[in-house]
Image (cartoon, rainbow, N blue to C red; front, side):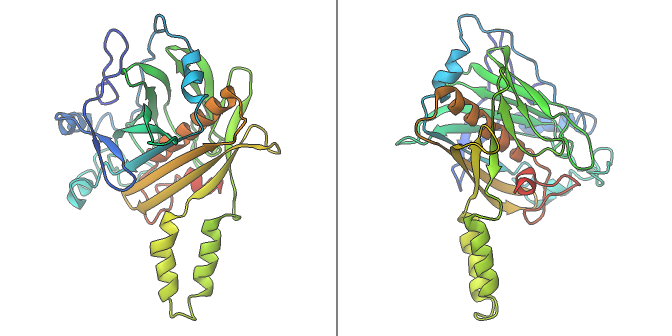
Amino acid sequence: PSFVRRLHPDNNIMFTAVLADGGFGHARVRRADEQEEMAQMQPTSMAMAVPVAVAAPTAGRSQEEMVSLFGGLDGIEVAVRSDQHDSEGTYQFLSQVFQQQSTLMNPFGIATATRGSFSIKSTAEGNPEIATLCVATGDRFRGDMAAAIVLPDNTVLAQWSRSSRPTMISSGETDLPVSVFGAPYGKMQTSKWGMGHSYVDASGKGVRPRSHGCFQCKTYWCIASFCLFFPTCSIASIAIICCVMPGVPGLYDLKTTPDGPSVGLLKLWQQGGDISESSKIKLEITPGTDAQTRTAAALAALFMIADIFIDPPKGGNHGGGGAPHAAEMDR
């Protein structure tokens, strides 16, 4: 469908102007006919899965380009903003209520189809853009996803999709086959509750971000906020919660085995709540890691941020609509 992407005969993905946004330097796709297309989708197709047409194998392109792209990097950065329903104020969001059939996860029938195009940048000096992550969903509560990594020449490098997100109260797809230049190339995986984002190659070797749990800076700042509440009449606590903690990332080790050494560190920042949230990941690869593992780590990180982008609307950074935030649950 046109709201996911437009494919030319040469299988190039066509997104129009990407405009820089504030905060983390977010990027969003803006097209003149966007509102018209979104209106045409309501209310019948909002609750339907987002289908994705798998591109035919690209002639003259090798899957080794995936390894050459990510295997030589020391890290990547991606920033997203889930603000499909706040760009024109609260009225726009309220106009989406009861636009589709009510479900257990979406009792008010909120139409939440969204899409976005986000720069994948290297952590090297100057933060050069190496590719673009394109993500679309027909229903953020259902969690259907169509995602693609697009090269600067508009060629689709890799893509994956699913029809629904698994949660504690609903079933969904846990294995998402990945294709590179239209040919099979491993798979993305989650647990049956939609947590534990990972990438697994054809040989069964995978990389998964594993949270530091309670042993990270955010937890220590929370403890400090609690301890300073009464001595400072809550002033220091409010300052920590509002000014300090939003800039402190959650930390994840990337591992190939649960007890094995870390092959990288993933930092996750999240700000906001309600129907608008900013998220950013920064992947730092451990020196000496081989190219295949670097590529797997990058794919796992991109899968994680893509899933965060299509999370259901939340209030106060907590999960909503019966689908807890996967990153928070994993911690």
